[in-house]
Length: 189
Image 1 (cartoon, one colour):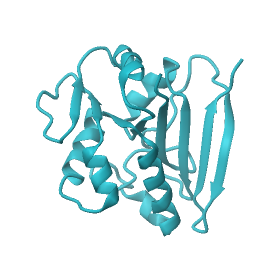
Image 2 (tube, rainbow, N blue to C red; image 1 turned 60 degrees about the horizontal axis):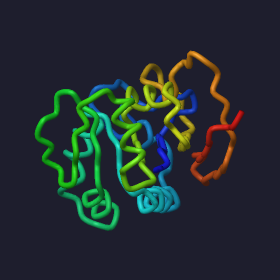
Image 3 (cartoon, helix red, strand yellow; image 1 turned 90 degrees about the horizontal axis):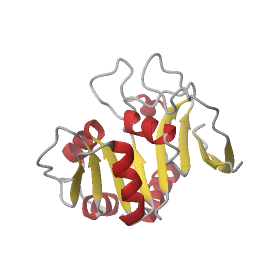
Image 4 (cartoon, helix red, strand yellow; image 1 turned 30 degrees about the horizontal axis):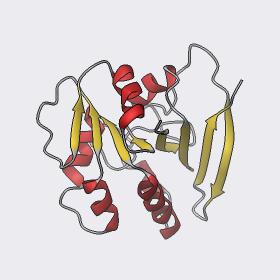
């Protein structure tokens, strides 16, 4: 079974919405407030290389599909060529290569996907989907690249859970920019 990894850019107060310049948020591009160094890029490339496939919600998919197909370099080559799965009830004709649309119940679709997809499965952005999969207990690992900014309003990395979810810190890395990478897995028991 493929491991499902939720990996997000997060403000110190938990906001994950609009980290890279999306026009819908008043603080769009807040990750640029940090000094983004080569070590950050190296980690994100390593993370992508580790992934066997990508999982996205429709809105994040549309942003990625607008940005990545025309770009060059190792990161773009990997993300463009890898299998991508997008959960959507409205997307019918994905134009981005190697994309499969999952149109059924998101939790059941991802439950099946974990049985068959090349793994690990990497989910970026896609707040609603990440929240639903967290609530369903399908997320195996959370990776939060926490930026030293406080952002008013916006979607949060974690939903308010119906029941407490215990996590175990697997790894912590700090960067000179003040960004901290925190990797958690579900705690057993």
